[in-house]
Length: 298
Length: 298
Image (cartoon, rainbow over all chains, first blue to last red; front, side):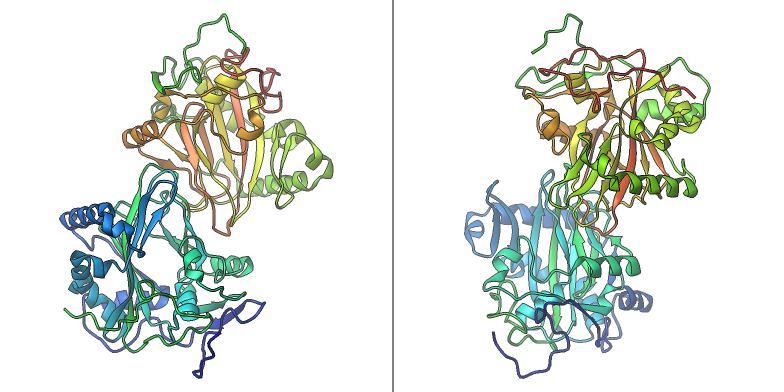
């Protein structure tokens, strides 16, 4: 275990008892006043920890990204890449990580003023890409993801000091209430849930499939759900969701015939560069948690 | 395999290829003109195969049935009964079958004019209870149920000749879009999906947990879902759903902390008494598929 000389505002995986820590950092950071998001939208994000943007992409754009997804998931070289997650039972591509480095089209999307402008407003600084991926979840057998805060993992395993990170999810398929769309607990980002257990070596290999260490206990989830309620990200293809890295979120399974596909880009503030992990033997590989902190520029 | 001398309008589990058979019987049956359902509601049911009744029960009534659920699930004698399904991992009661014979309160509910009146209108005759149960699905780990038509099983394994059967589900907890509420494909009841495979002996023992034989193929589900769409049963506790026995339905899992509980009563027409199974070695036990055809009377 690496011992850090820096102070840790969000200790986790250090005790056998879960703890609630009130967040000492803002959700929406001051610094960049103008951009595509209205003042009211920024205030909502600050309160709830998320912002839905219906129709961020036009339908022609959705079609273009859909084609790009098709191209990427059928390219044998990409399929063989370690950054690509292939489902063993079906031999189908499920996710491609660091996709902004694999695809110029996705790299361009990250620079798009509709995206970059909003993200800079929310984080109050220049930003770089901490993680990106494109996901394809099939119908009938789509597995969900249990409740968790991304920041808990990114702090423990990647060394992100503060929750100054925003995730963008853009739906490439229609999100219904019943095909495994993302659920969030609005306002939960104000509380850091310190988890129990210790991080095993190379934890990311399992946790990208199904996470155990770093998931909150049931009493905490029950209390948060009763306090915050649950909202679900639904809407036609092209809709987008921006959400804070400490948002408690998860998703159910998908037995419907309607698949789900999305582009997922995580932006971190350049003033929040990760150091050594706070609670893991070694940092995760760069394609899961980038060590390249070059700001995204228009 | 029992060979039936009667004609079979809905052959299933007889071939290796799925078949679509257009339903030759009505959904809403003529015969009982007056009752609590309006003509428009009966027409909707005939077209879509289901009818939602918001607030069928008052909140005081919900509380009374909730208490009854608590009493039943903690009674050691009931827990030991073969009609009670206990989850092995938690040792908790999940379902109690033939609950209208176990509980006077539930028996009274089946006779309630709000229930019996509507069911008689939809089936156009006197009715009896083919199956009843009370279900308790916990939060966090609630498993869903894959797509199926109940009539396919009730015809194959119980010998129900025609789809003249209606199921009533009454929510005892709030049904959100995200805690595993029932999904239906409206209008799918007009098509009988003949399934492949053969029924193993004592199939009900597994199929009450998770069904494989008697579930439709993916091409069929894809085509039905694109033709019919999917609706979901949501609403506060006390809401009810009446749905046709040949409705294609299923449910996702429930990772939220909000449990789901409901009362489920299946009414069959007294003019649709089951004979020998159409596609199973032996009929299922009476507590799953009643052989007592006494009409329910006010």
